[in-house]
Amino acid sequence: MPVTLEEVKLYLRLDCDEEDTLITNFISAAKEICEDILRYPLSEFDEIPAVVRQALLYCVANMYEKREGSHYYLKNEGGGILETVMVMKLMLSNLRRKEW
Image (tube, rainbow, N blue to C red; front, side):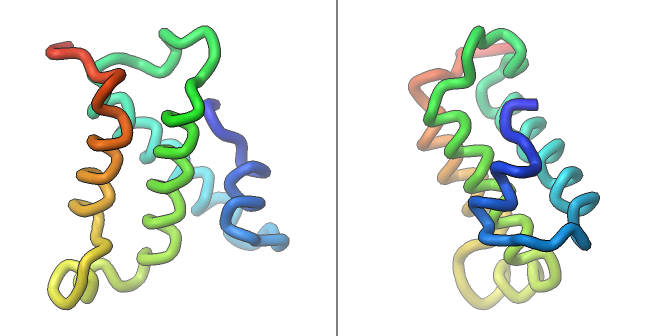
């Protein structure tokens, strides 16, 4: 796993275990989103670059913080998943391949 549950919980400033399953699912989803943006699997890296790790943490944090209000965020202010993906694309653009 490119980022661990413990790393994400530290990033989110969580010290409880109640939402570990949810956060683990968000980590998996963030990994898939990163791979879709990069157009190759993260397993191709010998060591995950810092910018990829930060993009993963950013994605998980946004999914976690806005998990119950995605419709509100999409309709009334920035910060929805589309904006999250756009920011991730900017972060990862220098590592992105032209095609799969």
